[in-house]
Length: 200
Image (cartoon, rainbow, N blue to C red; front, side):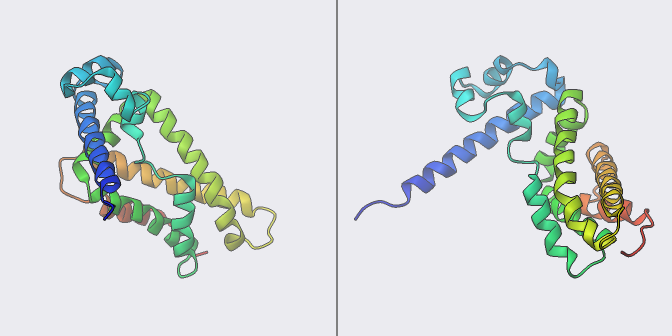
C-alpha cells in the first residue's frame, strides 16, 4: 500500500523547524534589537548554516512577519461575517477582537514578534503599509452601510476605519509592553469602548 502520510509529516517537520528558527531569531531581536542582529548571529545561535536559514526565510523581516499579520482579504472576510448582525462600529470591533483572540492563543510568540515590530521603525513602517491595505479593503464594505448613496459615505468610512485601526494599535502597544495578564481581546473591547460612535 502506498504511504500517504509522509508529505504531511514533512510539512509538520518543516513547520516545526520554521517556528523554532523564528523563536531563536525573535529572542535575539527582542534582546539586542532587530537592526543589531545579523543573519550570521541567528544561524550561530540556532546551530545551522546560512544556506539553511534561507531555505526557510528570504530575509530577517520575513522572520518577524511570516504569515502572522492578516492579509487585507483576511480582514475583509472577517468583517463581512459581523456586518449583517451588528452596527458598523461593533462589527469593526468584533473583527479586531477575532485577530486578538488568535494572538492571545499564542501570547508568548505574538508578544515578542509584535514588540519587535513596534520598537523597530523600519518594521513599523511595513506594518503600517499593511494597515493601508486593510483600509482599502474595509472602506468599500462599510461605506454603503454608513451613508447609503451619500456623497460623503467614503470619507465617513475612511474616518471610521482609521479610528478603529488607531484603537487596535493602542491596545496592541499596551499589551506588548505590559506585564499584566490582561488579554489583548479584553483590551480591544476596552479601548473600542472609549470611542463614542453613532450606531450606524
